[in-house]
Length: 524
Image (cartoon, rainbow, N blue to C red; front, side, top):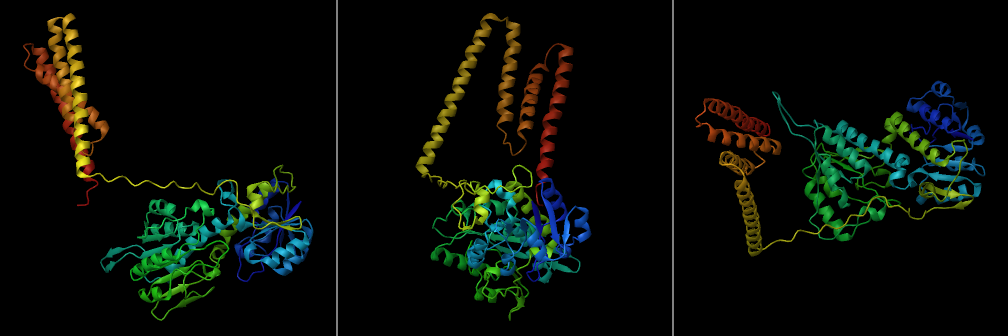
């Protein structure tokens, strides 16, 4: 079978669904590859590079659609493109099935099998085909770059001879793939980064990237992301009011706002209202990644950059991935290639459209002259549902005192038992051992006991557990040596003195090293 990629007809679209590298991988699956002349030029891939990779160059789009079995493209196909499809032909692209009823009907009437890349289910096995995530990752990164281009200061704070520059404060609304990419980029540039999301399970992810998660003072339990395939869901009116109140509180403080909130198959929710924009400082920047679906900001104009009366720049571009066309094309072409790998289990260049497969079934919107959208829920959840954490019980002063007394009694009982057992054993040894042995043995036992009591009870915050053990051993040596230093034998005195000296170096040296280590973590 032959797989082909036409040139994108959407105005301003620079991406291409097949790169020379992905074409080589598709050929290993048994496919012949073709591309419309000039389709990759805007992404930096010339026809000559494709030819070297063994890709056939076809002059016109009409010839390409007619001559291939599988069409791979980026943007939603136009009516003209869909009319070129023939019975049994497969189309892989973004399709927007929720808002493209006419396209679904036309594809059905043509007998085309359509795989919508935005419908790939978010399960672990399908991550390699998740084109939404790969494009959102680029959009999040590019959003911070665009914000920096329109922001009049450094992201990181600086203290120079010419003056002090405070760090920029960045708020990312929505901590999905795009949001996390924006958080990582803003943090790495030195900004103070805050993030908000309606899914409580992402707070740890946000904080692990060096940002501060914005929590709401709100009692209502939030829906776990596992119930919605890992996506955000519609929230209650009470939650929305608490959310907006928090944003109004933050609006005068933040310099850059990046909004990424989208709910599948719905218009973008309005999260940054007009009064919030008016409360922001002059020179602040808003980058609205939801502009294509109406925008999270009330004042966003799709595909335009505007400046409000109070000097706030609002960027509403809808082509962030296309602004990094080479990188975007490489990632998207890899998503397509992985999809083709699943569709070609025998690697013989023949598609097997297995509708029992969760990933293929979930992404297929028309098949065998039938509309198969919406798909059934996948058998495997996107993420595991979180079990609610039980809050630790607050103890009363009486309960705390009772616990402390019980712990003290248990510890005393343990120590008395150990001492009793030790005394019995010592008495047993004394019954059979000579008096000269017992004198030295008792000294050794006392040295062990006193050494561990002295050193082991020192807090580990003052030295490492390993150093505690070595110091305990050294204390045994030094106590034993001190008790023998008054011996009548000159040799014993010399050996005891050497033992005291060397054990002393180990003990005092260990604490000096620990002191220097602790000093490394002091601010002053």
